[in-house]
Image (tube, rainbow, N blue to C red; front, top):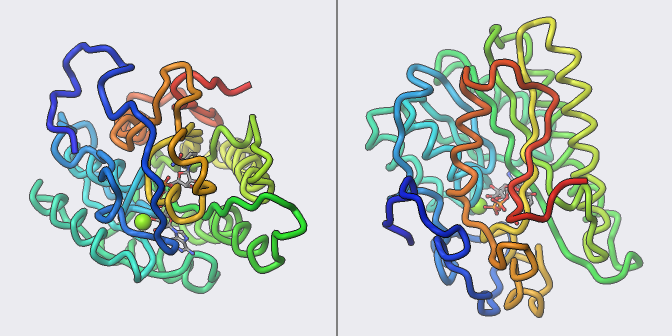
Length: 299
Ligand code: NAD
Ligand code: MG
């Protein structure tokens, strides 16, 4: 884990781990704490400046990877944070909760399966009740399973991937919108895969393209309420998703090496964007997609 000052000017090619990664496999959803090396989600490196003081945020997938980076950054910017994740990820989630509480902010742990509509409704009810409202929704959770041949994508995998990645966004948005005030911000998570879909990720890439259409349409619908919706589209980032079947094992040593910056990203490299999109600094930005890809631009 990096302890360096990420605000210091430095060469982005060398700032973080830049080699490939050793092969490693965990059962999905996996634990960040068991990855080699452990990703940097800003635990020691992200420093806040109070940009979200008093806000209330729900982060799905907040236990690990990109969601963890968003949750830590939100707390350091002064927000109370509710985290959703799967029950198997309790230990990762507790680490995040401890970091949030260290900032003097409230951390609420709300484990459960987003592929279940009734859970999505309950999640919003619980987050609203335990935080006393919601201002920021960082909907980061996602399912990704690499399969070489379309014939081997089971209907079960196809359905689950769409339920977690796309349907849950509908269910959560429907439940939360009546409670959001002007100034609230919703941030969804697409991928470079929406623009440059890989041959082993047909189902996943399709969901990531759907997320962009969903988010842009929703942004237009809720602009009249003063609510903004934007999309983050990461490139290769070192997270549990990649070691739990998101990549084929043989692709891990080369993971991220083909970006122009010749390395994979670390979750903390998305922290600033998640804060910006949640904060009032992005007040004139909605229905937009932001790539964080090491140079594999969205097109
Ligand atoms: P991650 O494994 O740390 O996060 C994914 C999270 O999704 C898990 O922690 C888990 O809590 C959650 N999740 C999965 N299935 C769920 C379910 N049924 N119910 C509730 N939660 C569930 O990996 P990450 O890479 O940080 O992934 C976060 C997002 O980033 C995902 O949407 C992913 O598609 C997207 N993304 C990642 C990359 C990358 O290279 N890591 C690239 C592009 C997009
Ligand atoms: Mg996780």
